[in-house]
Structure formats: structure tokens, C-alpha cells
Amino acid sequence: MVLSECRQLMADNAIVEARLVHDFLSAGWSIHFIDLEGNEYPITDTYGIPCSYDSLKQAEDMVHQVGNCPIRIDSLFRFAER
Image (tube, rainbow, N blue to C red; front, side, top):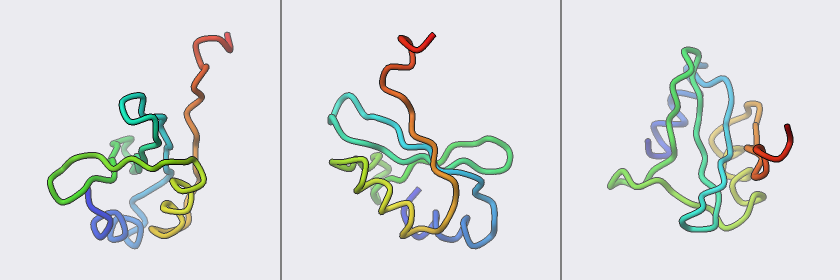
């Protein structure tokens, strides 16, 4: 989903949170917006390829450019926290 589509969902109050996910392939961060039904919408370019951001701060700033919503950061070491 491109930024303009994410902004439209945010304006329609369909987005409940943003999830920042560590992208192991690019060593960056991807953003997934989650709607009321639990569907995930990653930010993509116009070709449908998920965007990757170099730092967590850059990904958080992008979420704030789309709109204000809670941000959840996926733990990289979730398997070790048990």
C-alpha cells in the first residue's frame, strides 16, 4: 500500500496501530499498518515492493508523517524472552 493509500485509511480511522518489523533481508525496518479487523498493510512502493527504512527512528518518523497511531516494535529477540 503506497503512502497516499495509508493516509486515506488513517483519515478514515481504519488504522488502529503501526507495527515496525525488522527486515532481515535489507537489515532495515518495514512498516505494517493494522486495521480494525487485524489486516496488515505494509508500506510499499508503486510496484508493490515493501519499503525498508535504514533506522528505527526513520521508520517511526514515516509513521508520524502518515498520521498519529500507536506504534508497536517487533522485538528482534522475541524467541529469547520466554
